[in-house]
Amino acid sequence: MREVDEINEVVDAELSGDRTARLRRDAEQIEELAYGQFEGRAYKLFEEELYREIQPIVLGMLRNGSLPRLAQKHCARQGYKLFVHPDDLRVLKSDDNARDTVMVDMVMEALKKLQRDLKRGNGWRADHNGPRGSSSLASYFITVCTWTFGRAYVKWAQGRVEWARLHAVYDFTEGAANGAGIGRLLGATDYEVDSEVFGTNFEEILDEQAPETQAVVRLTVMGFEGAQIADKLNISHGSVRTRLTRFRTALYAAASMGRIWIPKELHTRKSPRQTAEAAA
Image 1: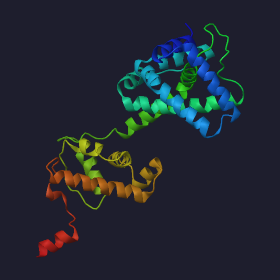
Image 2 (image 1 turned 135 degrees about the vertical axis):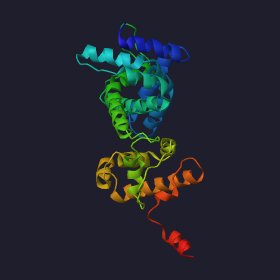
Image 3 (image 1 turned 90 degrees about the vertical axis):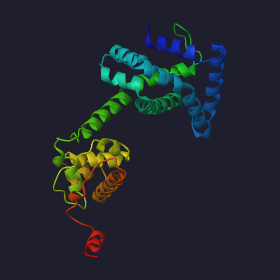
Image 4 (image 1 turned 180 degrees about the vertical axis):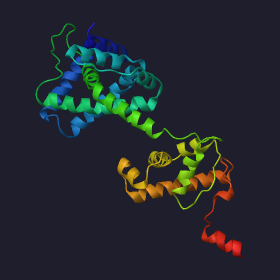
């Protein structure tokens, strides 16, 4: 069975109502949008409605792996290879955020293609004379999404690999190389650290921070300097320092609640307030 026929079957099973009536409605809608040359507010509303209609179907096809499989079949038919890693398929099956990320990029690209094709008089037609007759507009658009899956998938997969690399941090449990881990982090802020910090909740606290803060901290503990981090994340050097300071604040707040142990002996550089209190 050809990929288009498989997609038609999936969509027909998901969408309610008579297929013939749906085709007639689609044809009337496209004819009406043609008067505005597929531009303007009416076309934007059409895109939003189409997106809402196909979203649950596309997410389901990403979850069960049928959309990546059909995309691979299409690429093979066109003479080039699209490899989807099995680990990525498992992530798409289990992770809502991963599916959403791939789906949004894929649909946005497909919407651009749909608009270009409609303006040129190509694309979906109510009088298409294929083996199964005309597909509904929803079926046709999901087919376009399938053809644009490869680009969205590669972008997401490359980002996943890069994020995994940024997350390759030291083990912060007792006995690990903490001098190169949290010691380096705190040393990059206003404190000097002369011993190790033992805390198994470090990752938990870090995961609570904003993504950009997490990236700055993880790059810091990997040994990158502030200027290098700024270049990698395309932010200012000052923003790097601010993110580190924010995390240091969160870290010491966690210590005050007993979530992580940071001995007071670590603070070899006292604040002006501490100095004044000691003098008093």
